[in-house]
Length: 363
Image 1 (spheres, rainbow, N blue to C red):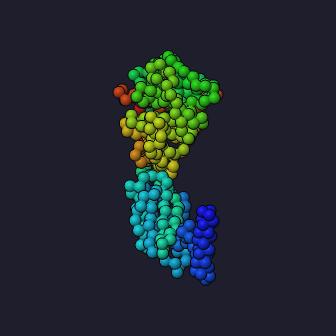
Image 2 (image 1 turned 60 degrees about the vertical axis):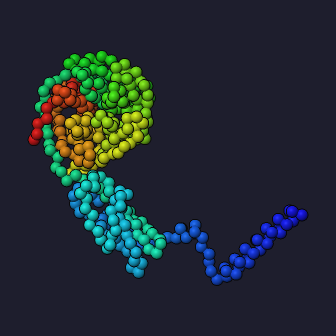
Image 3 (image 1 turned 45 degrees about the vertical axis):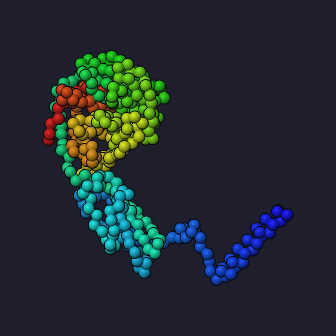
């Protein structure tokens, strides 16, 4: 009996709902909330500048929006730059001031609203430096022996010794080197599957990157015993530190600031000079608040402002390795070490038989 009553009530509810729907739905289409959110509206698009246009820092960028339908005027338009709200755009043109926006990619997004609906339009442009870098040449102060079999990928100086990270699968290592003689005093090799890259010293630990394995190694500074590993999702090239963060390059024009504990990205800057992006940034050294970076396949080191990514200076080391010291195996300039106490700068290259103490000379 209870089952019959429950079934009857359920049937009555269904019939009542059906009758109500028929009464109110003969001439009207019912749109659910889910359906209404799927409605599209096309109000605006960017007509200028073109996507990917390169501007100089400090330029005013004239943004021009075009109405998709002259009869559909938006109620309001909001402009965002790199997801930061800039403000309302009252007309179809807007002059964007770039002072203080930083170098590199600017993702520009406008959101137009009308009658409860909205539409976004996006483009990206690039900001290069407005500073002409200072040019330097060099003076050789002293020449040292360097292991000609060392495919130098990382280098730093500590208490009278050089610490070097070498690359190539099967030959990758970290090593402690006697500066005056080039003699290897201590070393540890990586597994053959890894291609060693940049190294740096942080809190009495040596950090080492690998090229494409997306894994890094942490060693005790004194014993070279591996104490842990870390991971990242890009290539590993150069590595240095500002004593707070680890600073990493990946062969692009990006410099990444990483948390030493978990290697999570804290921030990154894009490196530009007054002509455009400087890519293939390789071995790194932090010197007096700036980043010095080898540029792969060149004889140049760029001096980078850590806050903006702006190239402040360019060091041309062409001719450093004499022809008489070159062999068929000699590779490119790579390796920068700084003695912060003695104010001495050391440079070398991959498979170079020499390492040099140099002094910068302004052009």
